[in-house]
Image (tube, rainbow over all chains, first blue to last red):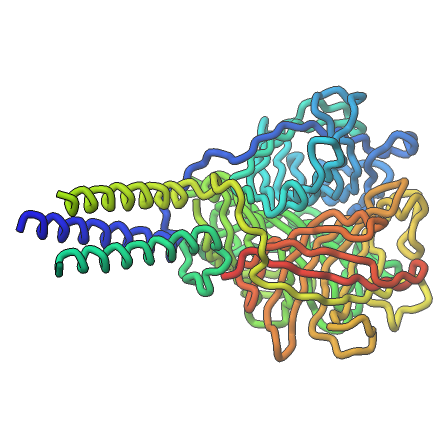
Length: 192
Length: 192
Length: 192
């Protein structure tokens, strides 16, 4: 009799557990708090040398769109509002511009606010090193006067197949309208 | 004997259940029909005042790219084909342009069809209110003559950490080439 | 006695299994190797006819941004660096330009490297056929001198609600700066 009742309670316990699990599977969005521990963390620097009419040889980026009141040679007034910049910037492991690049940051940014420097970024990290082959794709707003800014890792290929996460940008150096260096801390929360 | 066989059937039942669950975990993409119930729903309005050569002070957006046959002051013919617009638009809770903004919609849209107004959007909602801090990032096609159009929520930060979902756009007001207001219903299906 | 111990071992086995499952649910990012078998695979072609000053009628795309040293009528030197192109290209099931389109590829690409043809893409496949309604959104780097290039499927709507995956691009034809055709193999790994 005791045995029977213990089996019965065992049965109920398992059924309950299974029901819980099944619900969690069927309604993954209902998981109220997923752990925010990254499955992969990396820090890189990338270096942008903006074309200003005089540095054609060294420039890694150029203004390619501008509002009617400006032009594509010199960054526009009003916090560069409307300037669209295409870039192909070296990515390095340290903040040294002359260290060996591990890949290229490629894409565009645009300035989208009149009263304070703010940009919007769409770009990829294209890795080509012994450590990593593949790419990570990014998109997001960059209110660049803030010390740190978060953008989204929206996908990846190769070593970063199907990755998702958040990248935290920090301006590590800034020289007028010609050079800036961004520290990029990448935290992936979905790794395949 | 009866007890033994009931234990045995219990055993098979559990093994079967566990196998199912394990498979569902290992092959999440095989779940044929995930529930389409959002984990978060929100409605916002954003307001775009396009620069037209005369409204520099009030404009929240400007044409920054245009095809060879057009210019960046006035929207191009052929359904504005090729026009690229950068914007920094106030987001409000109601359709009242003068209500207190809860954030800014920042990014770009471009017109990409000659015979009917159609655009492509890449932008962020940057929230800065007592209710929300953080950002949501969007991308997608906007065939704007349709009553409603769906674009993707491709990521988020802060309060919207790692979010994914779908946003349904609806033109709520439209005044020539100078002003439009979009109702944006955001449904998130992945919340962390 | 033997029965009791077998029930006991059964109990431990299930508890262990359940604990494993629960952990997998709570820490989905810890799943070290998710299966890379797509939940949906498709192959499409899309056709780009670039405006070159003479083909206004047939062109499906146009340069809308260019660096200071170039213009928007003719593709720039230095591997077209800085050129931004808006497109609305027909999607077909075969490589035949004249076959019935199943939708439109709409968005933009930009050339972002000086020494070798490389582009960055942000666009959507907007399906409008008996087979599919809805859209897929793409973003990523396209080093177009490589035989195949992977970009990310960052979201979807309609029939492709919440989809994620990888698209492999292959240049299927290329005629000077006026026409190219891309074979696009889409593999979705998240289907809802």
